[in-house]
Length: 225
Image (cartoon, rainbow, N blue to C red; front, side):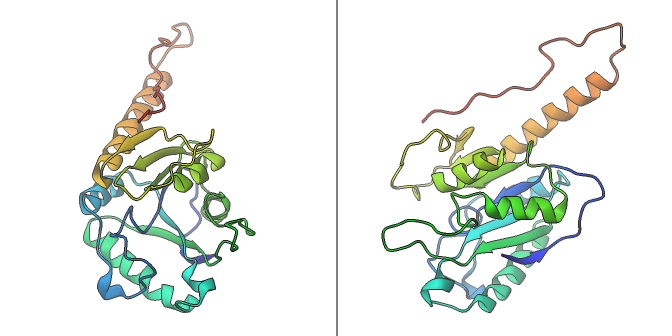
């Protein structure tokens, strides 16, 4: 569900999807008190870097506390407002806040399309904002975030800060990059965006009779732990 969303972009562009708890914010289970919301280590500097890209920054968060009765859905309005304030304090703009209010069944099974590792929230945001998922990024602290991003066709970064404890394997659960902090993830996005723009610039200035060098395109390897 979308609690807030920015305007549709005039031209389709990639976006940067961010998990909330444990990635962007310190992980305080089921917290909806704005006074207890604090950025995770490196998140402030990372937001400054990501804000400079001009790409939409969209938070996608599982919030099973709604279904479990720990807090009402409207309590997330204060969370979204506080997130917007924190983004602004660090030179960035919160482009959207999407959340899944459902909880898994007792056996762990999922019966909705929005809960990560599903990609429903990312696709909903893409449709609402005019986002091209190819070339977009998903940054999270557990492999469910990685899987959601890869299902949607995004590049993925895992912040390996100890929050992933199960390490359940799967072909969609291998991140493109593994880092330790949010600012390190942001630096990767910046570097890859710079490579992409440099490649586009070279191609646009290449004469039709002068083929582009095969080494000019940006490549990356999937990281291994």
